[in-house]
Amino acid sequence: MTQRLACGIVRAVSRAHVLLLENIHVSAHEEFRRSEITVHTHGGGMTDTRLIQALQALPGDAPLMVGIRSKTRVTAAVFEAVPRLVALGAFCIGTDQIDLEAARRAGVVVFNAPFSNTRSVAELVLGEIIMLSRQIFPRSMACHRGEWRKSATGSHEVRGKTVGIVGYGHIGSQLSVLAESLGLTVLYYDIISKLPLGNAHPVDSLEALLEASDFVTLHVPDTEFTRGMIGASEIRCMRKGAYLVNASRGQVVDIPALRAALDDGHLAGAAIDVYPKEPKSLSEPFVSELRGVESVILSPHIGGSTEEAQANIGREVGSALSSYLLHGATIGSVNIPNLEAPPIDGGCRIVNLHRNVPGVLSAVNRVVAESEVNVTGQRLGTLADVGLLIVDLAIDSSDPRARAVSEAIAALPTSLRTRIL
Ligand code: NAI
Image (cartoon, rainbow, N blue to C red; front, side, top):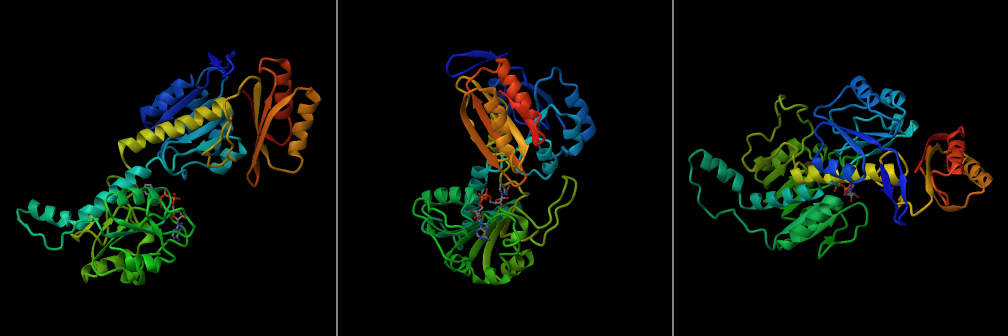
């Protein structure tokens, strides 16, 4: 296999393999094919033991990568048994299924795709705001029962109404733009000062937002400060006849307090996608105090579940893995310092992951200085206990001095993993 550099040099690089489990979207295959990485697939998840066997069976001695979704647990045993494994892609949002500490100790870079489904959530919320405002769900249920509830009473356009967005991050800000295009006035509250998009207005407190909004929609993470942040007193702060939407995290809303406000008519309705307790499998029943309340749209945590989001995840994680393999870039990694690394323009690159202890940089620089090779670029990123150093040298990787430098850096007691590109 060859790699064509920007300067026109073509040089040999060994062919890496990626093992993709759990039906990862085909968009990822395209990313790997573009980078000339051999793709192997397996439909379901794997146990640790099977994963180790599958990775060890891959031919050659080139670097390996693996892609999983939520079903495959990756423990320290995998990193210990497969030293060729250089990177792991979680083609999903969460990384709870991976022992990130063990991966870091082994110098395995882990990527995920936390924001690939932003648009999907924003679109669903916008749709729900319209459906709530027109009371479509109770009327649809009535039609299903054979009742003809044709009336304009209680149905409203959303144009000119106010939506209050709690959490103006990726989803909140995207929703802000979409909502404004429909003629809604947008208020938002965030604990961090965020630049308003379009004509959105920041407000100083949660209470101010709750009191001024016809629709309140939550887009905060699950933290000790957001758990229970919408309880009885916050709900009572909302306007009478307002609507609550939660597609963030289940613990953010006090469900019994919401139920009480729906029962006594303080709130006109709600749309809920996430719950304090969610079924762990398709066969487990869904239990909630909101079941049977017609003015509530219930959905099974599918805010971000679209084919477009899956394709985005495939592209995002696939390109992050390819870019780390080919160039050493770690932007988007969840366990290693994030460093940009543009394609190498002539020369070669040494990528060194090391324990972040005093004296590492001077030890590496001593090795490079003694080789008398010119350094054309150097980048360093550190987290508490791990550092990533990228050194560009003015010699080709086939030059014996490049290999000697790389091997001497790899032999330093602080080095976790060293690659030459
Ligand atoms: P993000 O991290 O981009 O934005 C979160 C925002 O909330 C940040 O601006 C942050 O400063 C703000 N925030 C944090 N604590 C706050 C507080 N106490 N009060 C006010 N603002 C606060 O996150 P993103 O991507 O927008 O996701 C938001 C939520 O949506 C997350 O909880 C995520 O898990 C959830 N989500 C749900 C999906 C679904 O399927 N229903 C799919 C994707 C994300």
